[in-house]
Length: 175
Image (cartoon, rainbow, N blue to C red):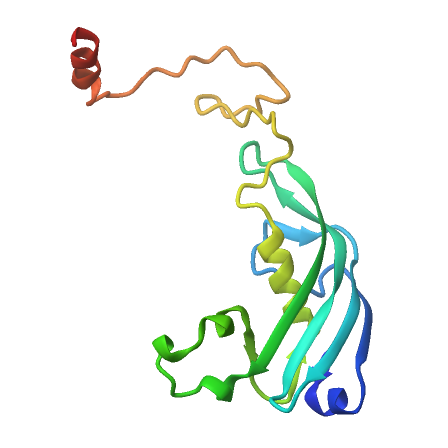
């Protein structure tokens, strides 16, 4: 859905869209929608500076690989957003120090408007946790045999490597 400035000049746009799997490209093959991602909200044109306000709610589920055990895990995506966009030409040629601090929270668009899929993709990626885990108690993969420790207890022992700081530990014990 394209949010056109010309259309928004006439009336507020109501958003009720479901993006099927494969429609939103997250540029990370480890993160993919496991179903539709729905968006409900509104878009409107504010004042005479062609500032677009897009607000609403995003809900859906993503499938990702756990960062510890590499098993698939489902990540729920749900949240509200309230965003403002201005034409990119409004700050063109201004040094970055001259941009008011309030403007640092505003996005910029080029051309005749904004693509809703780009907004949804950006918000979902911002909401994802830095470390994606299948659960808080995930034990990960054994560094010796490579087995998933959540499924099997292995008897591998991890030998400590070359500890170049051991002399400092000994000094601390003496002191």
